[in-house]
Length: 374
Image (cartoon, rainbow, N blue to C red; front, side, top):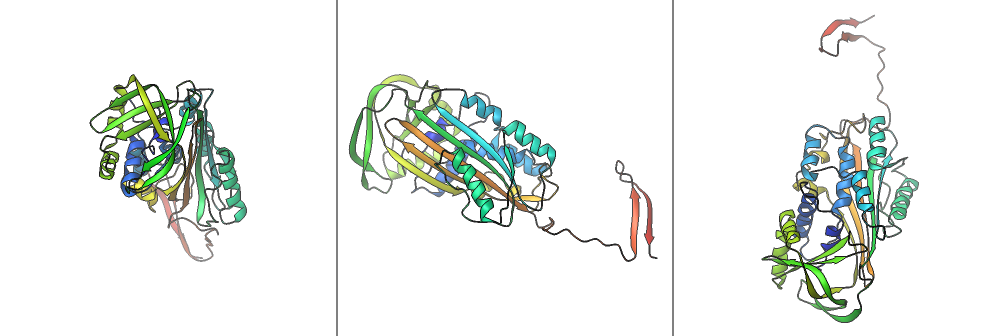
């Protein structure tokens, strides 16, 4: 696994004292790293958190409590705008969309909230047709500047609604570019040496260390955005796995608090990555359980009972001598619960004897009751 896999994750998340903005990021990464210790990993917790916040805007009861506990805060349009304004020379774009399928309608209050608080584009979609799939994939491609061309591989007739966040990041190094490139061996976690283009620069950088990691900050643009590279002190494959399992928001904040400007001879590999993951099991393990079950509570989204069928993310990363380009798409697909209506309306034809009542809603009292038999 590359030692740089954490860097975009950290550069995309601001550290805000007094909030849990990074708690979700490190819990999510820790679970993914533990399940794929021999693979490169690249995820965007910010994209996932934004899509989940949009979902949570229509959740209630235990479902909402679980998502609240998972995220710790709301990742909405104002937060994205704050990040976007941090550095005019660095591109950060976050876009949200809400796709509504056939047979259901979203509540007006939820649509207004999605537009106002998340800047979401709201569109109709036929999830059972290739045309509907192409429309969603085209939106994802445009919002990621062509780096993630599709999030859906085929038509999914069971899907009734989809919530999507797309992120795009493009930043040039604050020092213009790495001046020295060399082809050298890179030791993989499996113990193999593979040739990589290593990028070198000797300069003053912000640096810190603790008992497990050495960390250096590599800034972009006006230094509002930075890449952070964490190098485990234990150079063995087991050492990396152990260190990756220990990364947390607390350790991260501690390393940040101890950073000092020192002279560093820095070398990192030039590389590209594409990554895809379905997050259902991991999110469930982190505490978001009920949303994936027929007892999910999303009354704020639609009168049709809905549950989450999957949460999927795709990412792209290019780290080179000039800077970093990265993109992510997180898609949350929703389907009807087992108690929900089908595509066709339920027939209720009272052409035979029936009972009836008149009830007062505030107290629940039945005021009249009767039957009609002829």
